[in-house]
Length: 301
Length: 276
Image (cartoon, rainbow over all chains, first blue to last red; front, side, top):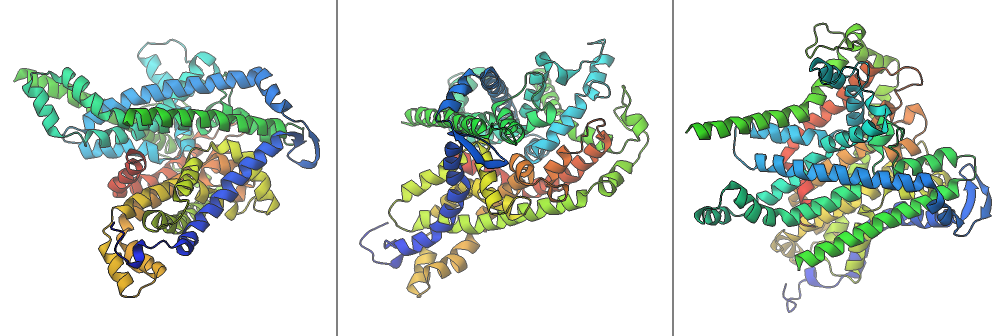
């Protein structure tokens, strides 16, 4: 863009720009920033959702109570556990399926469409589908495992801490691996063929080519996919709410928070406590986001 | 030669495992939705159904306001998508093409929202919507959905506008066309592929969203589809046949959408992430 030209396109035009920008800013201010400020204000009081006029000032005491609440600390740990396992498995599966789709073969179009569909359907629906498959009496997973004589008794997957969390993770992996696959596939397709040729001429075998050409080239893509996915997984609500409602030690921060705000805090004065939890979740995810962004910048430089 | 064939066989076994993994749950939902109760509630269900019974589909529509729930979802997701595209595209155009102070600040503000945990604003947003009497109304969901989907829309579209050639707009200005007119008549028609991609993502997001819908729509006649399905499960009985039938009903249009617009959806998904 040369500045010597005087066509109207490149003139500073704050009035038009403002008119174009304002609707977006207004919507975002009303729906995101106002509630965020209000949440912080609420967290300084003890009140119930249904009786907003009966409030007592609590200062920062709700935040102190939060870290003394074993359920909160436990749920934070559950959320981290869920995020680590599901994002980890998704990344590995995502790389494998993306490598497969990067080859030309019959059925490729079908596989690509099949991969996209789990991502497109509502999480509530995928959770219900898997809850049915995990059912202890009539579920197909128990039925298959018993026909193969792997187990003698049906497993009540969603009732025990040792199996409930892995079951929930498996649904998330099924639902969001597609996102990983398509992102990594986009990264793979940007690798020039010459690099592989050069590696082949140097006598590198398939594994060496993957390790020294493919992986370094898709590392930035994987980095971005990891950021998106882990920030998303830290907020997990739907799957847990549908599959267990948080029973069998599967409760995550969002589930506990929603319950505190709208069930416990409905008529008892815990709405402020729930708001403090909301602010804390915002801070945790905010810190994580900043950390990720800085890490990526270092890598990009 | 034999070595090569063996590798091909292993590769195709991998392909089949991947296909089975991603598609079996759908197959199972369809099969479960058309089984008679006696076969549905059997501890050793057959992999292929032998008797068909469409009673579950009838029940979903006669015992529940499910048709209304589908209508609600369509209205909410459709309006949110259209409004988000209108508001988002003009903002994206301003960011990509117009000069103004504080542009970086606006971008940071918009991107910050994409990282907001929804639950963090849930309680206060409920209070705000309640004070405007918007609980149990369509706008009470549409407006929050616009805000949640704006960041991705603005980000993707401004990338799109940036890549477009300047010449057409310049010609229009020289011919005396105003800024808004130029945007509306010249720029927007050229941006249709980008609008379709982001519109599809917005629609899918709004159609699928659960937490806000669960909180802001509290009467069965206002439930959106995901909330309605989550409420099928009662205290004593879980109507699995109906849950599966409803799941199939809401999945079918999405499958069609995905098959038709596969490339556009993938373009939208990856543009938001790879360029960001």
